[in-house]
Length: 234
Image 1 (spheres, one colour):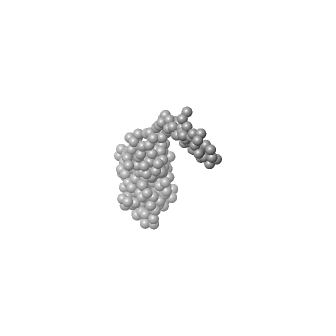
Image 2 (cartoon, helix red, strand yellow):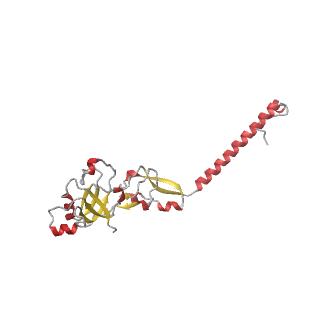
Image 3 (cartoon, helix red, strand yellow):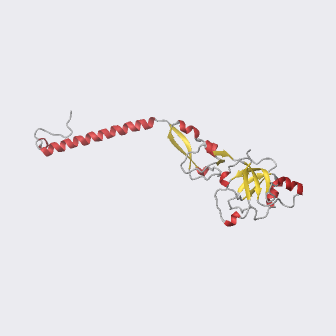
């Protein structure tokens, strides 16, 4: 075996204490380097042989009620695991769906946290309303009753108005067949918005689908009327 230090019986390193110490230190350094290289090679082999799964994660924060767009998605590879079976792997499966919860950037997209946007029922129209009740309790596709804080419009005949009103004459059941279509992207609350049930395009309104006659009833309500949504249990 070749002596890597090229010592000879006449070398000064072999005849002094300092030389022997330097020689021992060099041997330890070489041994440590070899051990580190061996460990690195083993880890590279194990990592390369481990199966990988491709999953979808959020490329940015996705608000609850927001529709999933292509720019909000990113594909990554992770070690194969049974836990990955609940995550989406195809962009086509995620695009157009609605987030049922807040999804943070980098978080995997799980199928149970998304829902297909509801389709508009035949014979229904859509209306944007600013609710006095908390919109956080609603999800796209949920059936609700819409109740106003003022009596139903006097334009209705008396029999119809009495049938629509709740036991308190100070309230009006706008509809019992509203379908939640889309939630606001932001929850902005201020005094001027809380006083209006019909907000402008940029206000945090909720889109409901309801029969046209009920939509007209909502439009006839005074601006100061407050509207709440109650789960219909359907």
